[in-house]
Image (tube, rainbow, N blue to C red):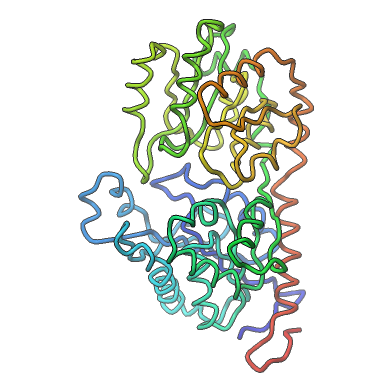
Amino acid sequence: MTSAPQPDKPMQVLSITTMFPNPRMPVHAQFVKQRLDALSRHVNLTVVSPIPWFPFEKLIPRYRNRSAVPYTLIDNPYPVFYPKFLSVPVILKPLDGFFLALSVLLFLRKHALTQRFHLLDCHLAFPEGFAGSLLSRFCKIPYVVTLRGHDINDLHRFPVRKRQVVYALRHCQRYFGVAQALVDGAVKMGAPAEKGFRSANGVNSQRFRPDDRREARRKLGLSITGRYFLSVSHLVPRKGLPLLIEALAHLRPSYPDLRYIIVGKGGEEGDSEPGLRRLAESLGVADALVWAGAVLNENLHTYYSAADLFCLASEKEGWPNVVLEALACGTPVVAAATWGVPEILTSPDLGLLVKDRTPEAYSTAIGRALENRWDRESIREYAASRSWEKVADDLAVQFREVLATSKNASGKRVP
């Protein structure tokens, strides 16, 4: 096992994550990158973001982007690598953890890094966490796991993956839920409660800041006097955008100037945009939709600032950073009360929680929010206090505690 880092030798951490931006998908999983950017101030960080691959994937449009992802990325504060790993959708999905572990192991051997790292930092319990459990045994170094949402809240549908996740969480040194609800969910599945810690996401309050609303609307070509609500997500079924379009149809008689700004595009889960357009046409609100497409993370603050409200109608979420980003821009939120969302919207002064995922419930909540007089400066201050720097500071302490209590191969404590 590699020796523990000394005060003059920073901790060497290998972060393994399939959720990381790349040149072909620059808006993907920015919240993971921002956490790692902040963490890199404390540790020597290397990121391996394995890209799923299977034969003939270029023939399927939704997977075609994968083959164009480069092997490495140099314009980053730490090295990032994108090796391929075999992942056949649906058919061999339960084997993703094994194939991902093999990919990372081959990467380590190729670059003579098998003895370099002190800690494996695995993002998602599946497949990264299970892969980490295998790599930890081979490399004889400890591993930690971050729970982000679907790796816990969607597992009831996949019994084989569920067993692998429970195994990974039982054998890791610690696991971190971006919401306490995810930690609680892991414990209910059989993970050790004493190993679970909440480590909520943060927000970059310099990037996500309030702009003058009139100026933001001019920049985006929007009406200065109209009303707008906004969503930011992949255009896939689980994000619940049809509920918001139907809610808009309910509200238009009372708010004829109301418009809905949709930021995002389809992803590997599919593309709902054609169906959403047809729904809007059938409800007579097609003229009230603003299709913004994919927007780079650093440009989103203009959209948040231009909107009266931000809305989230997802079926399930871990800790949706879009909510915190909206709040950091001083924009109140209407969101489904699912998993970690109530842990963000802790006060009615920040927004409204919707318990029933129905168009009627959303139209009622949006109507109430439009009539409310929000203290946007107070909303912004609440979000700005939850910085990525604080998240990274807390994680660095946790990582040091893990190494301080880990045992080397001879059974002696690492100094």
